[in-house]
Length: 244
Image 1 (cartoon, helix red, strand yellow):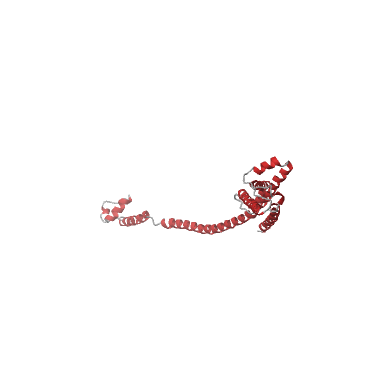
Image 2 (tube, rainbow, N blue to C red; image 1 turned 60 degrees about the vertical axis):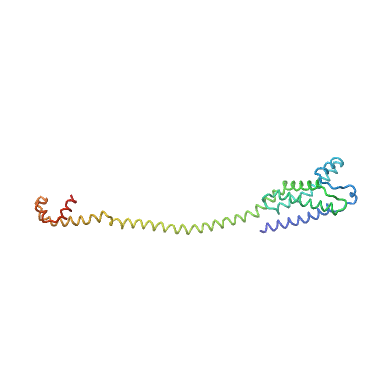
């Protein structure tokens, strides 16, 4: 936050100083040129005039001065425009500002007129300043001013997500243990209560009853005699047959 405030303050002060310089250069009356200067709405006409009618040094001074007037736009505006489409935004703002200056020149200032070539040269200077230095320093500023804030938010979100996931894991573990105990308990309690065991109990009971009743009727060999089956009940015989 301190970095952003400091940089923006410096940029605004730079824009104010540059605006004063720009107004002094472009809005100062020039009575000596009142009969010479005419408005130009055709791109390239003034540039051809510089090449044909001016000396080399005078042409460089005239064209180069307009280019240099646009350089501060390429250095300062990237700090104020959003990161997305930064170059396009800076170019459009520079062109709009210079069109406004040229309109004021042609309407209010003596000895000056609107010239579309001046707008082109000023915008070219802004692009030159942007590609030489403005893009690099503005990118570094935006990266340092905005990235730490996003990185500080992401760890907080991760901590909150981890804090929410921890209780869920803690709750899930007791549930898994309870399910294991339930299955074990079911196995242990269900083992003696199976249907086959229940079916065997009456058979064994009947067999024991039949054996007790048929003990007297058995011979020395242990086999039941024919008469031994008569005193026994039909249920005992059925149990003996099932047992065999």
